[in-house]
Image (cartoon, rainbow, N blue to C red; front, side, top):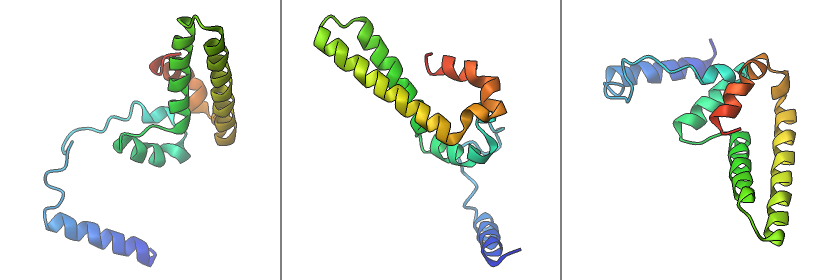
Length: 124
């Protein structure tokens, strides 16, 4: 074991002895792993940290934005505003595709398996 790992372990043991883990939220409850299984293994830790901080990944936020813009577009009556909304949707779709290609999500077996569930959950 390396030095940093031993130090971290020692601090965790000391915090446990001091009772710092007694009243943590969710203590004694099983972990909800249903959503994390759809995330590629190498990204799971980061996604878990973001979820615990009530943040969502950029690509999910972009998907949500696209859904909102498409809803606005359905009820838009002004041609200039409609053109602006279409342009913004196209830009967001391009950004989304770039992120997906960069993260190689399409190559992930988990993503292919759960794509439908993910899209339904965010409104597609």
